[in-house]
Length: 85
Image (cartoon, rainbow, N blue to C red; front, side, top):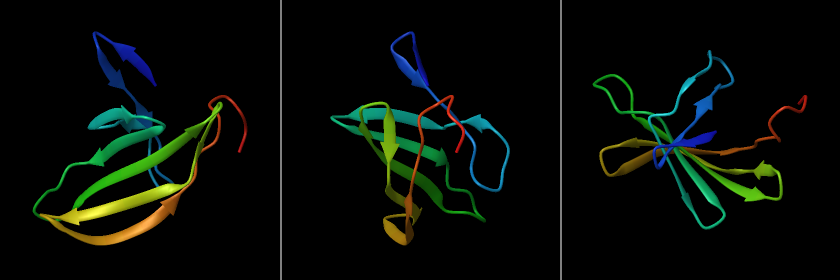
Protein backbone atom coordinates (compact mmCIF):
# COMPACT_ATOMS: atom_id res chain seq x y z
CA UNK A 1 0.00 0.00 0.00
CA UNK A 2 1.20 3.48 -0.79
CA UNK A 3 -0.22 6.95 -1.20
CA UNK A 4 0.30 8.61 -4.55
CA UNK A 5 -1.12 12.02 -5.47
CA UNK A 6 -3.49 11.90 -2.47
CA UNK A 7 -4.99 8.49 -3.30
CA UNK A 8 -4.26 5.09 -1.76
CA UNK A 9 -2.93 2.47 -4.13
CA UNK A 10 -3.14 -1.10 -2.93
CA UNK A 11 -2.14 -4.40 -4.48
CA UNK A 12 -3.95 -7.46 -3.20
CA UNK A 13 -3.63 -11.19 -3.65
CA UNK A 14 -6.83 -13.13 -3.01
CA UNK A 15 -6.40 -16.69 -1.79
CA UNK A 16 -7.06 -18.27 -5.18
CA UNK A 17 -5.79 -15.57 -7.51
CA UNK A 18 -2.93 -13.47 -8.74
CA UNK A 19 -1.76 -10.09 -7.44
CA UNK A 20 -3.83 -7.19 -8.74
CA UNK A 21 -4.70 -3.61 -7.89
CA UNK A 22 -7.67 -2.91 -5.61
CA UNK A 23 -10.53 -1.04 -7.28
CA UNK A 24 -10.76 1.49 -4.41
CA UNK A 25 -9.28 1.87 -0.94
CA UNK A 26 -9.81 4.29 1.91
CA UNK A 27 -8.96 4.62 5.57
CA UNK A 28 -11.65 5.35 8.16
CA UNK A 29 -10.10 5.55 11.62
CA UNK A 30 -8.43 2.17 12.20
CA UNK A 31 -10.29 0.51 9.31
CA UNK A 32 -8.89 -0.07 5.83
CA UNK A 33 -11.83 -0.44 3.44
CA UNK A 34 -10.93 -2.09 0.13
CA UNK A 35 -13.11 -2.75 -2.91
CA UNK A 36 -11.54 -5.92 -4.32
CA UNK A 37 -13.73 -6.21 -7.41
CA UNK A 38 -16.59 -4.25 -8.94
CA UNK A 39 -19.94 -5.85 -9.65
CA UNK A 40 -20.51 -7.31 -13.10
CA UNK A 41 -23.47 -9.04 -14.70
CA UNK A 42 -22.06 -12.38 -13.50
CA UNK A 43 -20.40 -11.46 -10.15
CA UNK A 44 -21.29 -9.28 -7.14
CA UNK A 45 -19.08 -6.48 -5.79
CA UNK A 46 -16.53 -7.72 -3.22
CA UNK A 47 -15.29 -5.51 -0.36
CA UNK A 48 -12.88 -6.17 2.49
CA UNK A 49 -12.91 -4.34 5.85
CA UNK A 50 -9.58 -4.73 7.69
CA UNK A 51 -8.67 -3.26 11.08
CA UNK A 52 -5.16 -1.92 11.71
CA UNK A 53 -3.47 -2.62 15.03
CA UNK A 54 0.19 -1.68 15.12
CA UNK A 55 1.83 -3.16 12.01
CA UNK A 56 -0.86 -5.83 11.49
CA UNK A 57 -4.20 -5.97 9.73
CA UNK A 58 -6.76 -8.12 11.52
CA UNK A 59 -9.97 -9.90 10.67
CA UNK A 60 -12.87 -8.08 9.20
CA UNK A 61 -15.80 -9.01 7.00
CA UNK A 62 -15.70 -9.64 3.28
CA UNK A 63 -18.97 -8.50 1.76
CA UNK A 64 -20.35 -9.71 -1.53
CA UNK A 65 -23.06 -7.32 -2.69
CA UNK A 66 -25.65 -7.53 -5.38
CA UNK A 67 -27.11 -4.01 -5.52
CA UNK A 68 -28.07 -3.03 -1.97
CA UNK A 69 -28.32 -6.64 -0.75
CA UNK A 70 -25.40 -8.42 0.96
CA UNK A 71 -25.32 -11.99 -0.35
CA UNK A 72 -22.44 -13.28 1.74
CA UNK A 73 -19.98 -12.18 4.39
CA UNK A 74 -16.85 -13.99 5.62
CA UNK A 75 -14.11 -12.98 8.06
CA UNK A 76 -10.70 -12.08 6.59
CA UNK A 77 -7.25 -11.93 8.15
CA UNK A 78 -4.06 -10.19 7.15
CA UNK A 79 -0.43 -10.22 8.19
CA UNK A 80 2.29 -7.61 8.28
CA UNK A 81 3.75 -6.96 4.84
CA UNK A 82 7.12 -8.58 4.27
CA UNK A 83 6.60 -11.32 6.83
CA UNK A 84 5.98 -14.95 5.95
CA UNK A 85 2.49 -16.25 6.71
